[in-house]
Length: 209
Image (cartoon, rainbow, N blue to C red; front, side):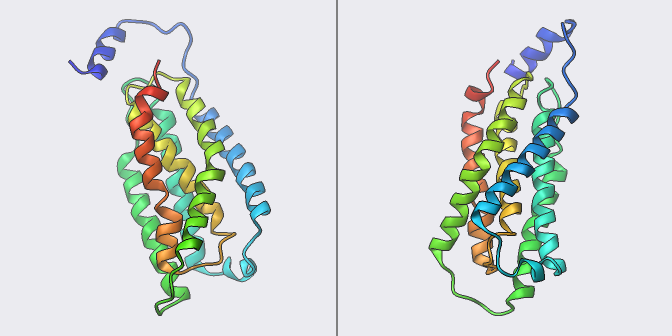
């Protein structure tokens, strides 16, 4: 019998001492706090010089809105998994990730139709910014998830990683003026992969209850 089935059988006839709070409250609290924190971080990083012009482009708006959609779906899914046996909206999240990647390609080619030189250092700098400044919101979301009793700790912590990395990447689009395709793919989206792997591996330890 798997751990998940064992927990379901063990808790089937039990009545909770106190109801688990709706995920809506921690979700909205996390969203507000994360937005304020990353806005300050972006201000310290400085805005891109063409921010007034770039926000008028449809492709740019699609890019950051898609990244925010990924972040919100991942955060909502992680909080939903606090309830034993709950399911995360993985199909919707997968579609949002594809939309995010597609919007990046569309935006880059609408800005620069031809190939541009790729700078590894600039991509690494953006990736480091996402990991560093996104970490406090990630810890906050982990704290909210830990208050529950998830039966999917690996998936829950993986979604936490996706949420905070995508949220930080969305804010970084207003500070990074490099719209080259490889830079956006490697510097803005690739940090999600090692973070998700780390979250998946550490899920059982960090979300133990």
